[in-house]
Image (cartoon, helix red, strand yellow):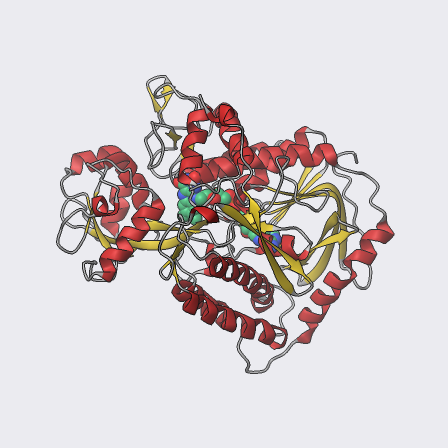
Length: 583
Ligand SMILES: Cc1cc2nc3c(=O)[nH]c(=O)nc-3n(C[C@H](O)[C@H](O)[C@H](O)COP(=O)(O)OP(=O)(O)OC[C@H]3O[C@@H](n4cnc5c(N)ncnc54)[C@H](O)[C@@H]3O)c2cc1C
């Protein structure tokens, strides 16, 4: 391996900057930062980059509450119980060896972060754990007052600052991976600040780009969550799995208007305080869909999304097309004891939970599908790893609350460590530069095309695509809607090359949107294609024209690119020996 901080630069006419590293990590949320730390601990020289700000963008910093791990502080627990719950929630599609890693390694990551002083909420001398839906016991840790994501991000940033061998670069959008002969050699990207191309040769590459919920009009995502990593991996020759399973968070905030607060903030309220989900008759209704709550928050996300959708369809929704969520039976003291400063921020928004109910509705929140990897988190491209939400399969058709941050931490650590151990030094320069030519040429061409015409702009096309995905590839699907979406996705894909990108060099956001749209269209096609093929209803994928779960569909759908065409096939779900799941 290279000694720390020997990332080289050089300048050529075609490439403004060329960097070299042992381990390249694309995306600096929870998974990317943990991967960087783990790779550095193995002695590797690491380049951690992000299309936005390192450690301050993506989903991790936005997350508010639960992180699932069987640390058994609140009551006796074992990672096998956690695994059993994860497999049950995943509706027969969980990649069990990956889920085993998730659950078995979770306690170590949570306790390591405790050593790093993340600030997990405590009761007396133990870490507090709450009961979240789908878990059989109190298993989820958190940092109080909706601070989990910010605290996790802060601690990881602090640890990174102590590592000399990790170089961090913000505002660098990776546009393509560089692959030669089935092996990942690095990446090519756009330096947004300078408006120039960057090439990066790496001994191993980890994709930690998070999810894709920015593809939907109603989502909990930050602007940079359009599924880049899935498209990068696909174009590099890797496979994707379970792409039809987009999780809608059932109780996203709908009304009244809420400024400066997170749309999924009602989840932690329900963990701590219960809350009542009501239809327009003022009646709790989840029991009609097989999930009686009895004052506890136990309904899983897929069932709650379905129940709200059906109540609205039956004319029993709230005025803006969702359900009511009520905490009115609680006193101001109970609310303040649980959420102190948050109650003041709600008051600033004119919301008093002792006096009024709020409206909630399903919003796109998380992606169960993703890059198909083995138990080493490596894709079928040698040297190409994935971590965090970019990984597909561990949660099957439906994810349990709290498993996503755990996944970012556990897979981040594992991917970074294993990538560093597998680094093959001595990537031939000539090989890298030859393989990078098409990606660099596209960057040059896109940046200098400077089309100022009045065609559909990438920004407008993204908005149209988000509407299309919401309406026709949302939580409830039909062949008719999916075919309509696929037709329009193809039209937009054909229109892409001529879309105007403006003339700015530095911070050309139209150019950034052009590259985002290029990925979004490919990923949208993957979701719609898989959703059309799976003619049954299961977990987060609900077909109105095929409402039943079909036992024969207990298989994974795997996609890869065959030229420009998407090839799709069924694969048996990887299972564990039953004895390994029993506690
Ligand atoms: C509002 C909200 C609340 C949530 N609450 C919880 C919770 O309480 N519990 C839980 O378990 N989960 C929760 N989740 C889900 C969880 O936060 C995410 O699944 C997890 O944080 C993903 O981590 P990650 O590191 O994989 O991706 P992210 O944290 O999303 O980071 C991905 C990074 O990749 C960068 N990137 C993307 N494309 C490129 C590119 N082409 N080039 C360079 N960089 C790129 C992005 O800018 C981003 O910084 C929540 C999610 C949201 C949105």
